[in-house]
Image (cartoon, rainbow, N blue to C red):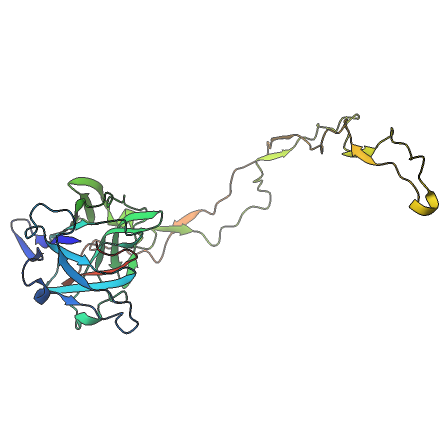
Length: 323
């Protein structure tokens, strides 16, 4: 369930709220349901609800996914703007009525949509932000689109959408110095650099393709001990003939064939002998090609900037709905 949404941009001396929604009366007129999955019968629907747990049913009303195992798409437009030179703040509140098992609760924000009814997974977006879970894989997504590619964070942000019936407030602040802050319920779970924590840019350095490992390079850290010898009394025979066995008195070689004594476990067996391993004095370490400047690296101090924000929406798959 989503109860409140806010999208704003702040300059040094002033700020502007570009979109705000509490899903009160008339919310259906401000939002457009997606028909992206309508033709194959997997398009889910949304309904207004305060859920099973609320303080004031009218004030706590939000929108809720209405079926299980469906795709859910919903978007709203607003006047286009760029976040150039401004802090961009995206904030919304989400509540899961039960364990969704597999699915998301994130928002997508992107350029103006020409036809909101087609909104779905293939739709380009600028930022995707919020909780996602499938089985034991849980994370808070923060994905940025850069030059047409959706780039995930190198390491996952903590998943905070635990506790059925508990609302959580997600807040993203994207700053002109190419840093981002993520808060959940006022707790800062991330603050860092887009350049360092996302692979948006090509690496500054690459391995030198011309650098080759020397022919005398030794990368075996351990070696057989040349002074270690197998003891003369080492017994490797696992099974031996039972010398105490006797041919039965009623054994008939013509009828039963030639009698052979049975085999038994050898009590002197010591196992397979292996030479002792010692540190290799010639070991030089793991060889790596030297690093050189990457000719394809181009720095960009405007990673944070998007020229057009014009829609916000939910594009979700959920195994268990009513959230």
